[in-house]
Picture 1 (cartoon, rainbow, N blue to C red):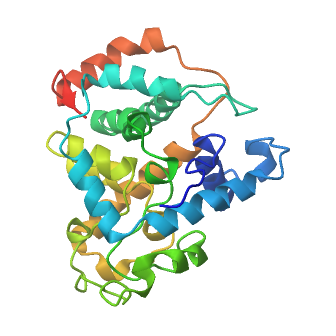
Picture 2 (picture 1 turned 180 degrees about the horizontal axis):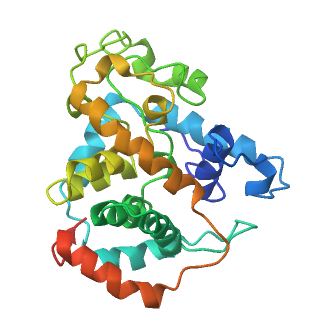
Length: 287
């Protein structure tokens, strides 16, 4: 790999802010400057550079290697709350409008879900959904942790953000992978499709034995915007995927639009969430 800056974003939240600009809340549309007041004109360029790296290096072989490395789950043993505290070392110091650590963002998401009366496993999913970002603390570059996800092993859709950068990806010209179906078959189901590597797939693999299927779909595919917003991979979906993607779409607004400048009261909320975690998950998990 060439010698370059593998972490071009000033903050990993830059990716999420870019998502809000691309997919504004249809119920309460805002101008992009109302979400974040950045005055640095280079910010969009850093997002483009992030996707250039992501699209160049997220190959089928790269994903396979990362699965072999990280799905051995031999980095750390932690409780969920320990993992949340660990994730808090990713506090965003560059955000001009909101000074919230990762735990507070997750609590805002889960509390918004809770206020709307959803099932407790849905609330728990809101708390957990970004926990896979601990990959950054294990030395992974940003482009292998966050970013819109997409299938590898078949043609890259033009509906993926900054799709022009895929021309630098070796799989783009590999006959095994550059057809519509690539190594897959029509309507084979996403369970049989390898996704680009990042925090979504990693956390899904950690939690897949513990949570209801709708929760697992939300965790695994919440960054798969090419499908749940653009429907670019309908040809790989089966009926089960279509059924559970309704939950992915229901979760998405809570993830994107629940941020607020007033931090949640972590101390007051912690007993509720400790009980909720204990209901579904073991005391400690391997990461």
